[in-house]
Length: 114
Length: 109
Image (cartoon, rainbow over all chains, first blue to last red; front, top):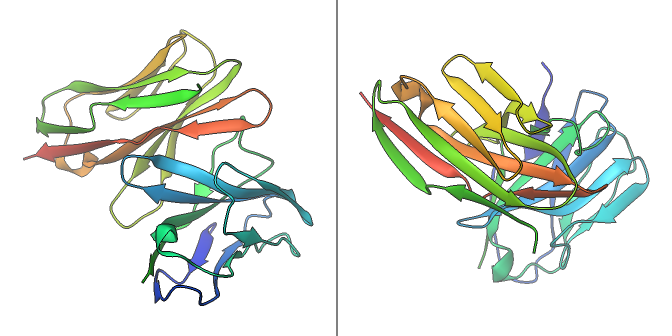
């Protein structure tokens, strides 16, 4: 089954404790991205990657890191999480980009930073 | 400022009561307007893409239309299973995309 898989679904952590949220897609998509979803604000892009070893900042990249060493994986790293990073996070992918193509989303990761 | 605004924030309908959701945008260089459906606890799921004013697309009880300033998602004779949050997103210029905050639709039997 074609899908985007995120883990974990739920994560509670404390300020400053490094964490990684994993994302994997099995559709051989070139484009992958991370979004955060906050009430009343809609989805906001954190980072995106057009291909292996190519990553770019989105609208809200501060406090986040990503890497794209393999085509299928795009982990999101929070090296020193803070409470304002409490949010619902989604990974998404598409064949070549987001301008003219639909995105496939994972099921989300609800992060709480205490 | 580039913006995508959805209205209403929430909409409650009786089963069979048709209505429309609005997505207005103020961006230059529109490339595409996307509608997604999001169920609780899940990621958004693609519904439609519209590329130019006047374009329409349909899927079951849903019909999406596009003008130069806004898009409508028309829901005809909705059923309870149509309850979800509907998101619109706009891609523009060469590398930009904005999502609206969504409309939360509840259809009562």
